[in-house]
Image (tube, rainbow over all chains, first blue to last red; front, side, top):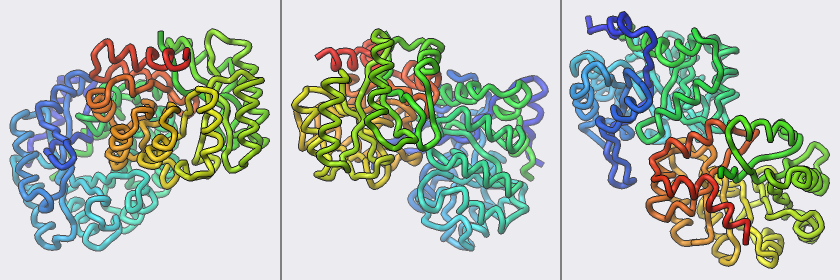
Amino acid sequence: MKARLLSRSVTIERMILDAHLHVDDIPALGWKMEAELCVRRMDEAGIDVGIAMTITDWPEVNPDSLELVAEACAAYPGRLWAFARIHPWYGDRAVDALERALTGYGGCYRGLKLHPVTTLDHPAGKDTLRLIRKAAEHGAPTLFHCGDEPLTTPLAIAKAAEACPEATIILGHMGGYFHADEAIETAERFPNLVLETSAMPYPDRIRKAVERLGPERVIYGSDGPVCSPRIEVEKVRLAGLPEEAERLVLGENARRLIDQVR
Amino acid sequence: MIFDGLTFLGESLFGYRATAAELLARMDEAGIDRAVVCPVRPRGYHLGPANEHVADAVREHPERLVGFARVDPNFGEAAVGEAYSALGQLGLSGLFLHPWEETFRVSAQLVDPVVEVARQRHVPVIVAAGYPWLSEGLQLGELARRFPEVTFIATNGGQINISGLGQTDVELALAANANLLVQTAGVYREDFLEGVAARFGAERLVFASAFPLMDPRLELRRVQWAHFDEAAKAAILGGTLAKLLSR
């Protein structure tokens, strides 16, 4: 059995967990996101725990991506946990890589991350569904980039939620700039969908999501460190949620999700 | 002095709305001193009355509000007439183009006649930017290239893409056109804003809230809590816009 984050909550009454951080180095884009910067930005924002993931996929374009994030977690034990970003088109190799991530690496991996703009695999494509189901076998959630681009919209990801009712699927960015309302409406239809708040710029949509879905189905994320975790926390606070709901959204819900991974 | 580079007034066909009293109350709540105010596309569909509505609000609150005229280039000569009238009789201070809500490609030549009015009157043009197919980074750059004497201010950092896929096109447009500035409202991501200031100068960034589409309290924090030095922050939060509109 993996160490439980739950033990941390005994001493922290109100923990903030950032469910969407990036550790990666992509010279082609000039994007450098180091674990040290993640933790510095978390400290600025009063964030206790973060979940880190790469921007590139395993094994293309980064065959060492699982080790990269695991090393970041090892450098900041208890502060950083991880989601494994894996390209679904590698068939058995991809499934094995996810199994290895969820059972090895010191237990740091607590979920799967998919960004269909980089993989070009539809959320309901058979290879993607295999990975989602493998994650669900371990009780691990799948975080999708959910924005305005084709392959990433709430209705596209809902096809995966429908095909894998046993899986918890997180809509990262909760639909982005133009699909936030659609994300809320879609999550009303599929109870295994959870909305994650990062980067979309509307505090009032967070409030609407909590009112329509209940406070247990919305989680805070920043898409940091280059989206400001501090500003993203402020966005949740500006939603004006009841105190208990804000506590759930800012940390408790995500903590529960990653604690249940087996 | 905090000068908001974009707010809207009126009841939009697309569901958002704000009265002058609501706008001023939100500015007071956020600590914003002055704001550029633009018309929405009204439920009555015609932009002329919407421009008059904005001009009325500016006349009532000249210390707080600066009005821009909204024109639809699809209307050709009528749009040119509206631009002259709004900048002349109504006393408005710039033009506002919304390629998404009016449906036109901002790089299309049908836009040129209304921009020519801005050039003649020495006023800036705000463009609702980052909308797919219609007002993407390089499309803005193309318009700015054709009118080097006109200052264009692109909303949304010139890019609306939550994967960051529009950032490079905007950076290329900024590099090629010194007359192109970008606003801060809703921008993905803070490091994009910081990079624009570092690479092109803080004077290429203009704080905007996009109220009521976005929340002025959050949008102010986006600039105040980004990692700019104090001089850059002062320019972005109002210095640059005040200078631009005093010409």
